[in-house]
Structures are given as C-alpha cells and as structure tokens.
Amino acid sequence: MKILDNIADLKKEISSLKGSIGLVPTMGALHKGHQSLIEKAVNENDNAIVSIFVNPIQFGINEDLDKYPRCLASDSKLCEEAGVKIVFAPKISQMYAEGKENLTLICPPYSAVDKLCGKSRIGHFDGVASVVAKLFNLTKANRAYFGQKDAQQLFIIQKMVRDLNFDIEIIPCPIVREEDNLALSSRNQYLTKSERALALNISKALFEAKKLAKTNTITKRAVIDNSLKIMEGLEVEYIEFVDINTFEIQDEINKNTLMLIASRTPETKTRLIDNMKLFD
Image (cartoon, rainbow, N blue to C red; front, side):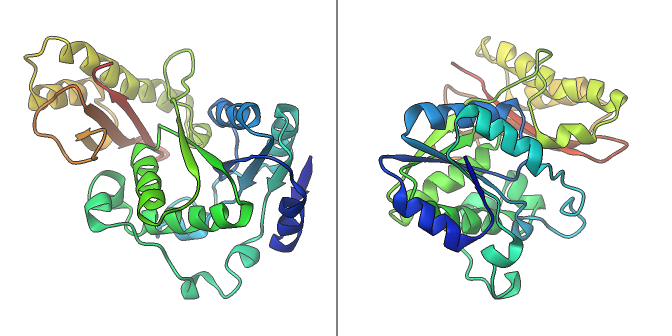
C-alpha cells in the first residue's frame, strides 16, 4: 500500500493501475462504519483508494475543524489490513493551491440544501460537492462508496453525478451501528460517558417511530412528539421526514418515508445525525 500526500504522485500511481478503481472518500478517524465501505470497495474492485482529507471548505464558522480528530497512522493501518492500494492524504495546499477563497465551487441546487443539515450549515454542501468532484477527477474511480448515515450528502452527490454526467457509480452503504444501536461516527469520541448514554435515545426514537409507522394510523406530529419525549435532554435541531427518492419534505408518512434526526449533546455540543427508513 502507498500513502500519498500530493497530486503529482497520485496521478502517477493512478496511471499505472490496471482494472477498476473503487474510491472511499473520508475525513479520517476511521471506524467500523468506514471499514465496511473500504472492505466493500476492496471486494468489488481491482484497486481500492481511500482519501483522508479534513476538508476545510465544508466546515462553517465555530464548527469543529480545528479539533476534528486526525490519526493518519492508525487510519493507514486499517486501510492496509483491508487491502487498500492507495491512501491519498493530501495537504490543504495541494487540494486548494490558490487558497480556498479562490476556489471554483460546485453549488448544489437550493431545493436540495435549504432543509435539514443544509439549513443550519450554510455552504456545507458546496464544500462537500466540490471536494468530492475533485476526488472523482483525481482518482478516475469507477465506483465511489458513501454511507447512508449522511443521507442528505448521499442524495446531493448522487444528484451531482447525474446532473454533471460524471462517469462513476455511487454505491450507497448501510448505516453501521454499535451493539447498543448508536450510529457510528468519528464525532462519537467527543462524547462524555453520560452524553453517550443520552445519545442512544436518537436511535431509540427512530426504532420506535418505525414501530409506530406499522400501525398505518400514526401522524407525523405524533411521531415528532413521541421522539422529542424520548430524546429529552438532547438539543434537537430537527426531526424531519422526506421522500427517500426525491428528498422532498413529507407531510404524511408513507412507504417512501425516510425519518432524519439531528441533535447536539448538552455538554460538548457534539452534533449527531441519524436516519431510518420507516418501512422496509
């Protein structure tokens, strides 16, 4: 396995690869959720590339850019053990040679970002779409693997690929959870012991909503009220319902409903997201 930190070396290595290329874009601090994506990329392609880049243009003011965990050594070990060919861990100066202020951005349509995470994280998805497009171009990947926990991100990337005719297949991968159903996230390591226990109520609210949806008589308002009760103690940013195919907000629950939650913990203010399709 090769660990590369500059674009020139990456291009040289890409040109020598034979067969298909699978890309897993990450910001590092890899956990079992990332590992599941990486293993799928390794199994389904002749070559697997993992990018590790804490992307400054997708962080807003007062977000956790400076404290976001960086652990290249352990991340690289995980990648090597999984069979990855290349870890691309570029410096910011490599990705944004003229400075991030002078970067040409890909801006997803307002209809895709004016809700959920995009509503509170202004410009976030511009940064995500732009860096992902750059990674697609640099790696020449045939397939790219993204977790369904970041559902809005996945939808926006899929739309970008369709709209801009990228010659790449996007592979959605299921949410990976701890044994107690907490969705895996690099930010989970911020949590205090008490906050981690409290965070379990996010997935609890989702699983409870899935049970309630089976009655076919439950309303959106009733599910929200029940979820808020379960998540008491967390600072809930949103509980929302979208059509999984169009990502349009739903007023009524149906077979296409994806329920999404974002909240912050009371002490460390860690922002956690999770989601669940209410009907199998």
